[in-house]
Image (cartoon, rainbow, N blue to C red; front, side, top):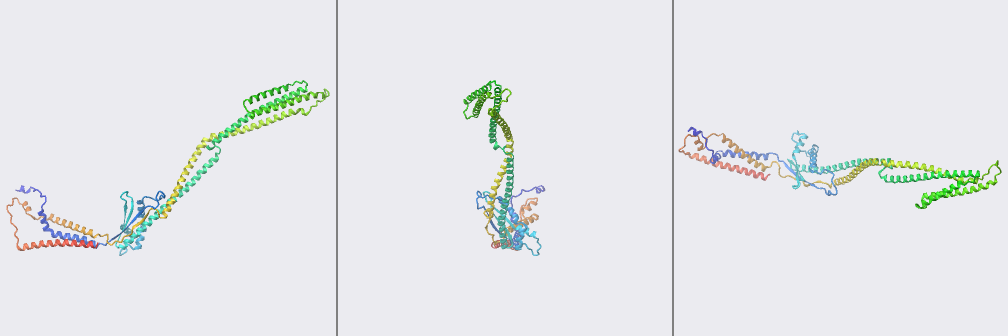
Length: 536
């Protein structure tokens, strides 16, 4: 029925007979494509120019001196430093020196420019870092170089290794010396700044001498002493003024006595006044002795006044007696009175003592003025002390900061100089060639064993792809099932194929030829693989 013909038949999961039929029909083509693809890839491994790769292992050795004793003054990031060294070594100038020395990358016509040759050499250089699996620290690195000549590869690898070792030593020494020079420059600046700060502090101290905080205690003590001296001077001045008044009263009394004697009244009023003064002084002395010792200044002054007053009293008595006797020696009412100069001695003594007291009063007043001036000066110093202390504290703080910075730089300079000496003696971190550059005996490229395997895969892929495409575009009916799908009715019986003897022989020959071709392909691939293994 047409409707039944249009219905889709269920898809079979896997028709092994169909695939066996495809193998029977397409095996010769598949084997030819397999062998052709393998021969193409495998043969190219013998046609391409061989390149030999030499390698060396450079160990990164730690400094011989412990870091507790000598701290390195260079960059500790080995990866950054190694990257910087690599860029310097792979620079155009460095590589051209090696290229010109060994005559590398020269073509037949000499058309390559220096930049092209440098680019080619950079592609042939490879650097591999070796890290510690525990902390990922770089412990070593490998240098690879590929060339068509194994001896050239070994020689270039050796030159690159020497460049890395020498450049690392030079870079570390240069960085260390630069660090030391920088610290020395900073130390010189810090020394200048410290000297400036010290000069400012000394100039300030000189300008404010006597007003500094360290002199406050001595200023207070001096001020207290000056105030005590002022009090003593004032007391002495008051005493001198009292003594002057006393001497003035004595002189007046003495002159009054002289007047009474000349008038012949004979009244001893002056003597009574002196006696009264003596009684007052003795009472005062008695009162002072109850409170002070004999060495007390006021006690000694009262004693001196008593002695002076007693001498005055004696002179006064003597003068009165002389005056009474002299009356008999006068001549008459109109005669001139004759007076003995010795009778005026007490008066002259009193006048002399009065003059001495006036001089002492003048001296005391000058001393008091000087003391007040000094007291005002010290009081001004003490009043300026807080402001001076604040200014000095600011200057001292700047000086201390400069001193601390200078001491820190001085220690860093010493440490940096030791680190620089260590680098110059090559006792710091350094590169050591652990494995010398190898002489490659087998080419690194092409890898003929791998290309043999790649050729086998390429041949298989090519054969399968071509057979699949041929089967996809082939619309001929190859099986009974395909014919039955096209018929509208059910097949009741089949007519078997009738083969002639010639057809059977031809069929057998095809089978033998297929197996022979299979054996040839397998043996050829095996032989090529063995040859590649032995000559790799």
